[in-house]
Length: 261
Image 1 (tube, one colour):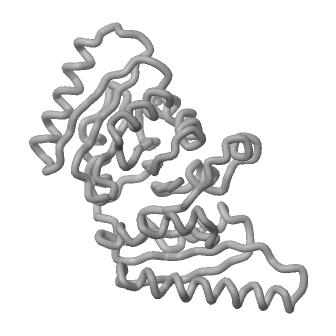
Image 2 (image 1 turned 45 degrees about the vertical axis):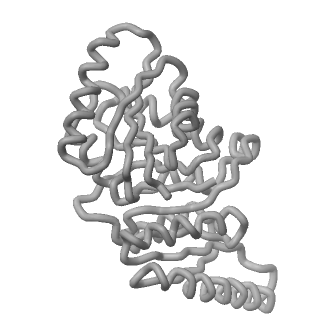
């Protein structure tokens, strides 16, 4: 499901950091990794080619999956999305964990553009782990976007041991209505547990009242989640003006966030 992955990089790039990133992505059943470097001019292309070839050679020698590279010229977000469509990738990875200040400046502003423009699954890559995926936090409001995420959550059950399903709602206007609301949410969570129990050793259900982005991030910290996975609608104007829950979580979460449109 997430076998072909596009990973944009900025040069110079620490090869050890690249290896760590690729190991994290490999937990998504990676079969092919495409590295992309975007330039604003075509200067020093020979040197860029040399560095990228070395990176690709290193990864191909160390890993079982295939690695290749592309160099494109133009606007960063536009070129990332263009190549992702051209190569029919399953996942766009947007790395934000880097010591390179230029890299952080470029990708910090680019991630929002990609989320608003692409209709592909996107991984905001923040934190690498010495261990493999263990705990996934699934933020759900049971709407259409959340339903589209379920196959991805089940798929990741091949690697992760535990899933935490979190629903954050708004308190009803009176106590009776609130009890009914909570009972309905619990009923939906129980049904979700039946589905997820087929793929995970442990399923934890949480329902809260509050701001969704804040509660999801707090629960990710409490449960020591390795990954947050959420659905999102690509409503450009609404996201541009107000920001979506998915985008707020991707910007402020301490761990990587997988967003499924």
